[in-house]
Image (cartoon, rainbow, N blue to C red; front, side, top):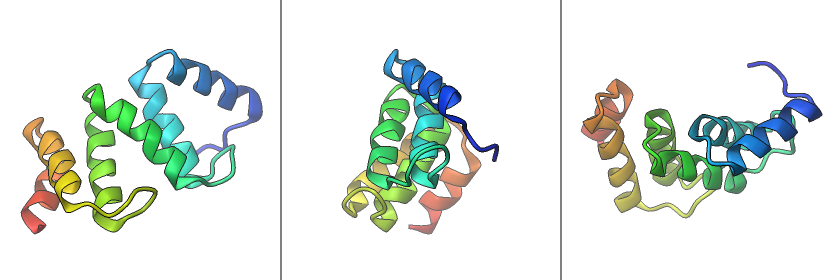
Amino acid sequence: MQKLNAPTFRQLQDEAKGGSMQAQYALGGAYYNGNGVARNPEEGAKWLQKAAEQGHIAAQCDLGVMYQKGIGVEQDYQATLKWFRMAAEQGDALAQHNLGSL
């Protein structure tokens, strides 16, 4: 993963705030991993959820894992099931595997 510099991070924030689901997913990952910003899983979950609600498959699967493990969000197995199911129904193999493992 390439380290985000300040101008790139600000541009990503602007695009995410403008509604780009790709930027929202990338920003969520940046906050989750502490790439270009202090690590903040709660803020990461917020941005991943915005992308997931727009249909971003990887964001849906990632959010399912976060709810399953209680990372950045309160542990919630109903939410885990919801997000894994949404990604799995779109053909995501990891989400299908995760769903089958519940």
